[in-house]
Image (tube, rainbow, N blue to C red; front, side, top):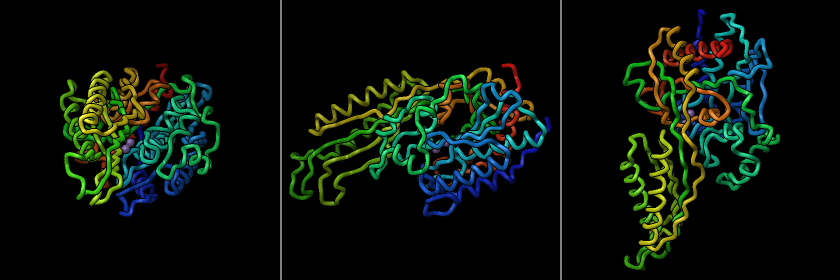
Length: 417
Ligand code: GLV
Ligand code: MN
Ligand code: MN
């Protein structure tokens, strides 16, 4: 099939999407947090693009947007693609967005080529892949996979104290969360296009990566309760400084991750709140987060257990109380051999080189994997940089990803598989 990918159109749309941003810096710096006015304006823009392509658009109860190109056998399970468009503070304009606008372009290119899907092809924009507002990532896809119900969303609270349910309802998504959970018969296949967010493809000089597995995160929230006091008056032997204790804990976390039996284990403390936060006051309370990942569940959980036990020993030795709550501990997933093969065939049809690889970042595909056979397509990003304003993939790299996605979707929509 001769495919004409209109890369200029996708890049224009990516640039327009980047203007829906609360970031004090101009695009390419982007901040777009779920259910804020910027997210709502971006959704309106996306819906208009989806409708212009003749897709049938609907929202579910948490605002996931589904845009369907109805196939000749509309009762068959669908072939899904898509990604997210929320963006963490001061991030870039390609993370997630390439999978949504690239997915749309793949559909438009197939339409222009006269392709007729047998199974419907459905484009998705997931609500809140990023954990920025409610602490937990992939809430939209978790709801779809039946992993978060109304009560669980009631327990997720933003920094204003508003629950997920309140905020979604205010944004106009007030349906029953139970209805948003999909049945396993919904999908025939799922393929997500995304920037790699790491350096491997660029270093290998390859335009496409085909994902074989996704590393999964465990997210922990640690609260350290020490004793505050006057920074001049309390002598050192009398102190139970929550921040000094946390500093030792953070060192211990890094040590256990470095000593992991698996090279794939990574651990990050990315948030630290200190109370009361005054130059002349001993910190009495500290809250920090731990993000721990691996493609091997056993290796990740072994490190997690060591960290949990060490935090308690450090706390006891320093006379501070430690609460360590696990917010999520998701299992890694393995991609479908059939879908990997379909994607490889699509690369060959496009005369593009590729490699198989694992995804070290997590994605909504981690949860779609519970509903459907899946794989992901990666394109390189400059210097492997992501979650930063200088995140960049070139028009050519995006065009290659869209072309391979289009061919993969076409195969999955028609093949017996
Ligand atoms: C997703 O944004 C991740 O943190 O991997
Ligand atoms: Mn991200
Ligand atoms: Mn992403």
